[in-house]
Amino acid sequence: MKTSTNKLNLFSFTMIVVGLVIGMGIFRTAATSAKDAIDPSVYFSAWLIGGLVALCGALTYAEIGSRFPVTGGYYKVFAQAYHPSIAFAINCLILVSNAASLSGVALIGSGYLLKLFPGEWTDIHKALVSCVAIAVFYLINLRGLKLSSMAQNILMIIKIGMILVLIAALFFPDKYAVQETTTAVTTFSNMDWIKSLGVSLIAVSFTYGGYQQTINFGNEVQNPTKNIPRGIFMGIAIIIGLYLLVNMSYYNLVGFQQMKGEREIAYVVIDKIFGSTGATVFSAFLFLGVLAYVNGLLMSNPRVMYAMGDDGSLPKVFAKQNEKTNVLTFSLTVFAAICIIILFFAQEFEKILAFTIFLDCFGMVLSSATIFWFRRKTKHLDGTGIYKMKLFPLMPLIFIAAYLFVGTSIAIADPSAALTGLGILAAFIVIYFIFHRKK
Image 1 (cartoon, rainbow, N blue to C red):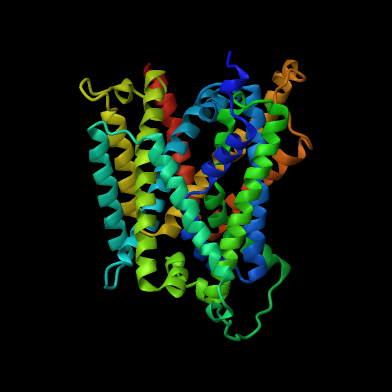
Image 2: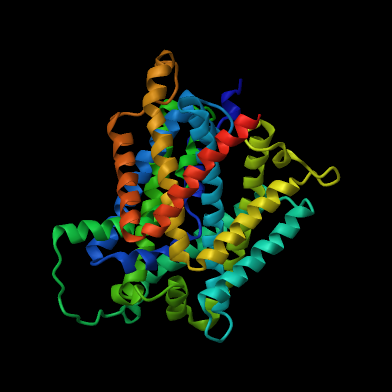
C-alpha cells in the first residue's frame, strides 16, 4: 500500500496529463486540419471540440483506472470486460497504431529536417529519411541504450518552449500578420459543414491523443476524488489554450487559405519572425524532439509485446531477451519492421494519419465503453475514496459518439484506410483462434 507521500499531488498529475497529450503533432496537423476545413469556423470548432472530447475521455479513463488499478490498465481492461480474442486483437491493433504513429511523427521530423537543405524533396525522400532514423535508433536500442527520464523532461521543455515561441508571434507588430486575399464567397449547407468537421477532426484527434493513459494513474493520485478531476480539467484546459493560441498564430501569420497548402507550417511562422537562421534552429530542435519520440516508442512498445509473449497472448519468442544486453531483440525487430512497412506502403503523413486514427477509434470506443461494465461490477468500491465522475453517463457517451463520428468520417473520406483497418482487426481475431487452438 502506497503512502500519500509516494502518490502524485495535484500539480504532478496535471503536468502528467499535459505531457501525455502534447507531442509533435501540433507542428504538422494544423495544416492538415485546415486543408480539410471548408471554413475557419469549422477549423477552430474542430480544435475546441477535440479538447472537450479529450476531457470527457480522460475523466472516463481515470475512473476506469480507479476501479481497476492494475499495471498496464489500458491493455487489460479489454480482457476483463470482453472476450480474450477482443483483448488480443485490440492489443495488437494498438501496437500497429503506435507503429503508424511513430512513422507519422518521423515523417513530420524528416519534413522539417529537409527544410534545412536546398532542393525539391518529395514524400519518398521524407519516407527514406524517416526509415533511416528508425533504423539508427533500432540499432541503438539493440545495444541496450535506455532513454532516461531526464532526457524526456528535456524533450518536454523543448516542446513547450517551441510552442511558446509560436504563440509569441501573436504579440509581434501587425506587419507580420497576413491579409487574407479576397476570394469568392462559397456557400455550403449545414451537412457540408458537418462533413467537413468530421474530416478536420481526424488530424485534431491525433494531436489530442495520449490522455487515455490516465487510466494507469487512477490509484496513484493523492485524494483522487478531488485531485483527478481537477488535474484533468486543468491539464486539458492548458492544452486547449496552448493549441488554440498556436492555431491563432498560424492563422494570423500564414492565413487560412495559405495554411491549406503548407506542411511544415511552424517553419513558415518562425521564418517570418526570426528569419532563416531562426527557422533552421527551430527545425533542428524539432527534429531532435522527434528522434527522442521515436526512441521512446521503440523502447516501450517491444515491452508490451514481451508482456503479451510472457502471458501466452503472443508466441513465446516475443518474450525472448538477449542474455548479455537484456534487449528484447525479437519484439524490437518486429516493431521496427512494422514501422518501416507502414512507411513503405503509405509514404504520406495524411495516409498514415487516417489509418492510425481509424485503428484508434476501435480501441477508444471499446475501452471507454467498459466504464458501464466496471460501474456495475465494482459498486462495492463506491464511497471508498476512488474517483467517480460526475455527469455519468453523459461524458462517456459524448466520447464514444465523437469517435464513432470520426471513424465514420474516415470511412467516407478514405475507404481504403477503413477497409485496411477492418481487415487487420479481423486478421488478428483469426490469428488468436488459430494460435489458441494449437495451444
